Length: 134
Image (cartoon, rainbow, N blue to C red; front, side):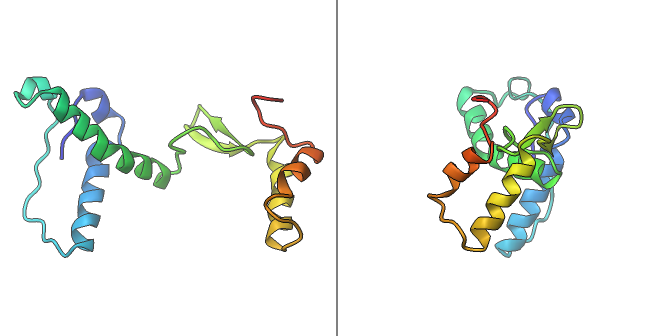
């Protein structure tokens, strides 16, 4: 397990998230982990540097980081319509204006009252707008 910078180490996702993912992967594939190593040096400092190493590391860990953030209650990207990003606690909250307009749409669809094709016009007629187009 490895973090490539002190900032990444401070984020709180890197080493614990990697450990969790590696253990889950090992268990899922019947692999017995014998020993773990942690490396918190920058790639340049450790002599293993290189752009390709960095790209591979980013590629492998991006999905795991997003999953770990979601499991911790953080939304790994921009909040969906009906929610807003709460930057103070780095989580999402229900949008006070748009959130209550979303629930009936789900209920109508779940009961079979409307099709997916019918939802957008209903959403607009109920006052639901996209935050960037409001």
